[in-house]
Image (tube, rainbow, N blue to C red; front, side, top):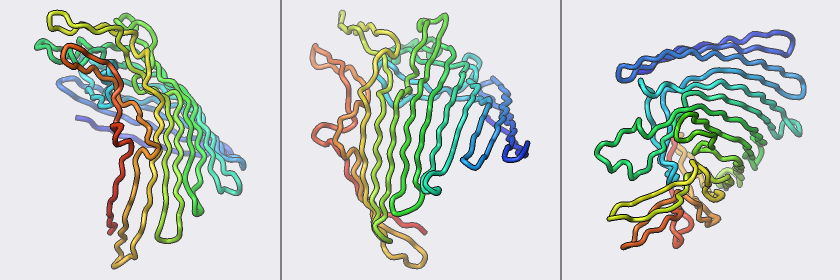
Length: 321
């Protein structure tokens, strides 16, 4: 059971300077554990003629934890609710942002710096093999600690004209600390992407046709690589290296699409979409897996699309009422 109540109030401090103050109260109950959270917010907004500056400080609580199998870098992570043994996570956040228009407001530029201090972070250190044991206990495979996120976000956006879209770049770190545990030290979080670049563009060819493209370029996410595997009396013996000490290969994907609109009838809009997923035919790593063949095994990356089908075409028909 979860509930929340929040409110904001904005007032002018001096000319072109506004203050936004707010608070959010939350209630959460799960399996006999009850938690209350108070999340204040304070933002200072300065809007000179050259753009908008915003300084923000806030506190946020979250009652669900997300973790996964770092030893194989599965993208299908799982959620764990806060309870008596896993307290709600919360974070202190500080950010500075600047927005401005360029070339007579044809383009919008935004630059943001942020820092977050996170508490009650959890990490799953078990492997999929642990799930096979009858006496499996989730809490015995979870370590608890704290973390910090910091970085830079840039975005350049074009909202009008025949060609619209945006470019964005993010430079950031997501570090986790687990003192007095098996992971005593500092490690990158499993979802960390140090560099990420996105480009989205739409080209309108009149009232019927529109072309689109999306490009994603990102650093590989961390995972825990093995040091060795071997079989002993039919049992698999494994030893892994330092937690999240390796990364998947760089992720690059280009998607393209074409849209055609039919004439509107009775206020309804319809059309056809043609698209190609992974048009650049790159075999991006999905996760690492252990594969057995007779008495041998291999540990290698698995790709989302097989080599004989490096891209994924699709066609769809839509109707808007």
